[in-house]
Length: 456
Image 1 (cartoon, one colour):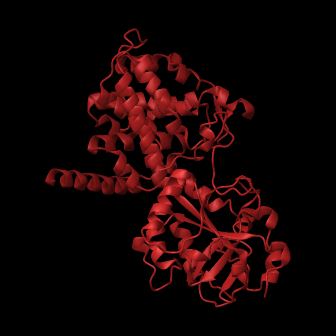
Image 2: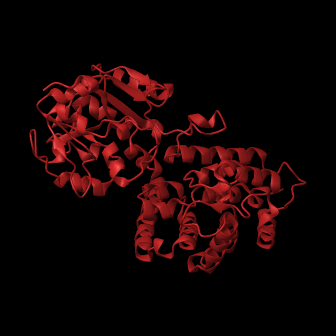
Image 3: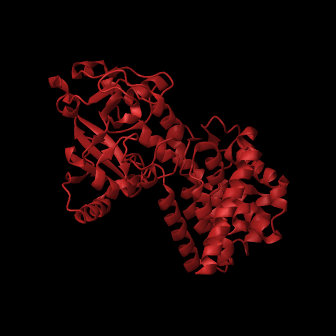
């Protein structure tokens, strides 16, 4: 059973987190049901619900068994699964390694393949004869678009090659990495083992693997990940705080004497800042946003003020949280960003970190005097205003809340702002019982961290 000539040049792909590389150098790729596979030693980027379906799905041809008896690979190099992972903000895309294998693997008797993703309620079709490769939707598999016209096509784009039990790393043609720095990291890890390893290369223009902001007008930004991951967000937050520390208080003639005076001005006129003025009348193409960004912001502020959680905060903290609520969506501007989209703001998961340079400008150029600790809390709340809501509703890792919140007061502030923001969009998005359980887990982890610090 040989590969039809028209498909012989193709590769099949498996992507994984760089943290998994030391383990992979010892074992190669192992299926989930392999006796030597250890979930505890694996940095999984898969969705739990999908894995449950794969664990139960039968493979009706080849060696048989369940999908979890196989190492999965994709036929396409630009994977919708990776896009979903990136959008959840649980990984930094620069930490993803792409292993490219020859499609000739399918000539071996222990491999099968599907015509769609093997993670749906209704299973895809399974094949063991390479002559059936023509039954795959190659136009969709090769598409460089980030979305498909339907869920059916999206699943067809994620057709899988499945290798039974295990797959040696040296079977790969090459490993594709994000940039030269990651290439060096991989090569340092490999050098310690002296194991055979495929060439480590950067992405080539004719075969894309990663989702970047290639459409940006800013050349420097084109190299950025479409959505910043946790390490990138934390780094940009630290950079913003350092810039504020260097430049705060240098402009004595700033329009607002203190953050409190700025807050009072925003209460009277939301357009009193250049950054907030850009949000007035800005419509959103996101269907859940029923109003323009300025009206949405006003609703968030009002809901925040009404929350008992907000009223329970210390007075000075309440002022900082309210100011952050007024500023939380400034990263959706300016309006000029959306000129090519008819002036409608598009869905932008990165808008919290896009706001950071604007926050720096506000706290150094628009405000004459601000304490560093106040500036950092305001900046943190804007940068992470979506964090709690996305942990509850989008599968974002709750550990990021623990990492972001330095103590109970910051945790309380993040939850209050997150609740106000979520409920201003869809009331049912915020489940009080789930939120309370999440809060308790995070507080326990934060207190445990503080105890460990005290013992050191």
